[in-house]
Length: 449
View 1 (cartoon, rainbow, N blue to C red):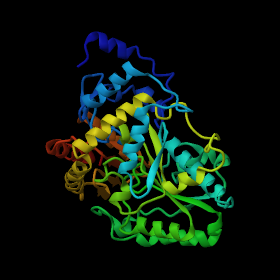
View 2 (tube, rainbow, N blue to C red):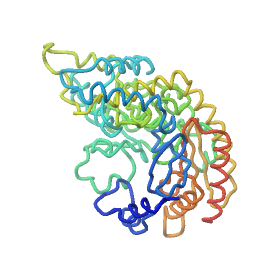
View 3 (spheres, rainbow, N blue to C red):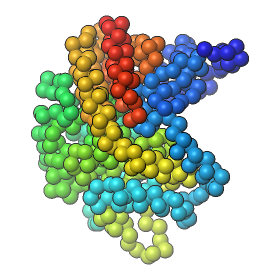
View 4 (tube, one colour):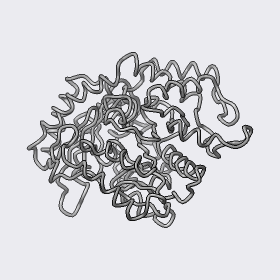
């Protein structure tokens, strides 16, 4: 519990100036929930200002897959602070940044071997879209300006990302300023055909053929790229049907369309492999990454591009800038140091394989909730899983909010999106912790029934 001084400091805390992201600000500030004010994080747990420990059921926001406070990462960042706090990325660079790109390229599939750094997944998506447009223009196909996204997709909150994204709440306010001409594939979640699937659903590969319909509608000569998440995380762990991503790859190759995988959640081990591309056996032309690249320690994202894309840009005089794009904090030294330490752990501790083992525990745990009140669907793949709840009449999303709040009281932090509860705990989670997580969720499900 808090001591008197800490309690007084929290009581005097002014919540008003902070406009919280993706948060019901009025509700939060009115209720001043102390179980949502985090004081520290270590291992698989947060500790609140009240001293309550919360098991981290989503690895932060899908980003701290190794758990919190790993000393190998912490010490690497401290050493970097003693060496250089900041190095510009324009016209100069640091050896550590070049070395990091080499390491990331060595893990990526196929000929994806050129790495461009951003600060987030949102920036990574907009970067990949710009690369795709410019690539076609440089090849003399400037008519290829159209992007194809997918319904229910989340690609961050930049104007490019919300344009190709398919979550209506993220789009409706900003429609007049979105990229024109974007179209969307249908989403792949059909409970009537795939409810309670374990791993990849057997039904749904044919949904990729909708891309052929869009090509026939718009003509391939107008389409620059298709962008999808291999596994959709933010909408609630929608797992790709068997053969679906492979079919998208075939159609894109057939029509000269670039394929972009948004691997902000999938990348760096959670899918049981280095990237979702390898886990699902489909190699894109561009991969967007973030989150797990340095365990969420310091903001970092990026794009891994195929060699052919990079080579296309390398034209004109050698002294000229090839791509007029970048960020002040691209490849920030602290983010780079954290990423090197994270990659060391990912390799030395066999983290992708361990996520595969964790996935078996998650699968058994989450599917044990079948038959509980109002649980209408369950999905899982490797280190991610989710279940859907029946919405309360006239109040969609409220049942999940209530479950989230009940789970906090029991010592578990989970993620809700609409009436979906998503889970992606850190790889260091023990079997007993995973068992306790699902027993707590079982109790919470019954409590909000």
